Length: 224
Image (cartoon, rainbow, N blue to C red; front, top):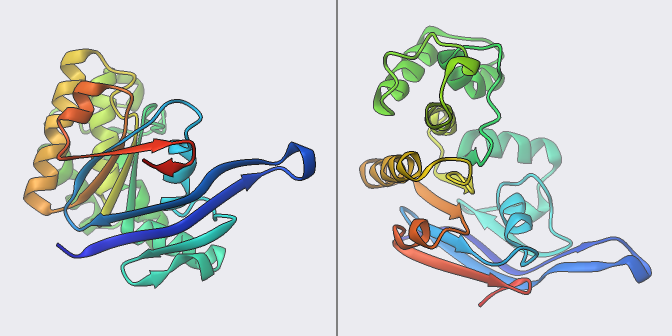
């Protein structure tokens, strides 16, 4: 396998002086292309901060962050936004769909933002993705008309819209019942196998973690 991303000696500090809190404490981590990995750790361990930095939504206080051969610690905010839109997809515990838009429109949204408009090609890809996640009969339903499991499937299709190399999933099954959670994880696994998309999935669920091929434990701001 080839390294997709690597962070070295990653430090993230919040606050200053007596209020300073160091959340990441020299963390090292590498992800290979095509990995299907779980990110584990107790609350306050630094998991969410790490995901936020890996997703280029926040810069570390110090350390190195490389992905696809690019030094992201040295990149401007504008360059990070463009890099994120092209190469990284996100799936959250709460799907964050646009309630007044259809499933199809929600899936197209990342490409519409990137290109500044909707296109026929984007609409066709969004339709293909919704078929792949089993929602061919729900494309024109508003987000508010979908079940929790269906909303999360739309969120997964949206994360894949720009064909990212990396998908970061933060508790993607945390708001679902056991059956829906199992279906979502099975879907993510199929996408990983078929397209070699790399997944890093943050979870507190041991069964979800066990379904991943690698378990990464974060404890006290480091990978343990």
